[in-house]
Image (spheres, rainbow, N blue to C red):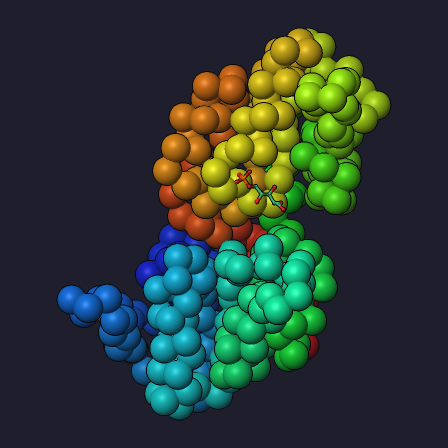
Length: 286
Ligand code: R5P
């Protein structure tokens, strides 16, 4: 097996190679002045089972992934497994309005056209896995995130909404702490309170666990409320940290004490390696 890491996840690809005792194939990736992407594989791939690691955010990284897949086949790979640690466009997982494209399906089709198997981490919704039309495994990095939250003294895990409860419950179970989800309660015509459905946060070290943090708006709104309700500490944790400009400030102003994410998107808050989760997923493939 050879790991071929694109420019999105150099650290994750290296950690994965180490965890699975596989060689890391080198490649050169650069951009032409007009933003077109250039890819050149520098190590032999003939007859190898190649595992490409590449998150598809931002858009140029998707193009790079398609080129890496083509390059692996051109160089004589025996098989190509694509690891998409963060599958961008996954929030457009159905047509919300007539005429809308299901972007997640369109991009899954493009990726799967030259892949034998696909692996992704904490997909936004489980049914997205079916979009690839080839053997696809989704694995969760929640166990790795939970361990870090445990070291930080977290004693209550909150899902931002009911739909995100499964991940929050999994983390709470690992830590042996309580778990709840946030709910919007309308107090009057123009006042809404965000509060945990069942539990009291007073004096608690709370972690809000989401799959994606993008603008930080969801976390900031919840954190402000939780602090007002007496939470002693609020951590914001996610698998995929997009952290758009302004998000860090927004969360800090709302009283968030700690931000952490995995390295499915590599950045300053990637304090948790997703490599063990990817290795687990690869071991589940047929
Ligand atoms: C929504 O469906 C996702 O699970 C996240 O809650 C959302 O993407 C977070 O976005 P933002 O950080 O912009 O509030």
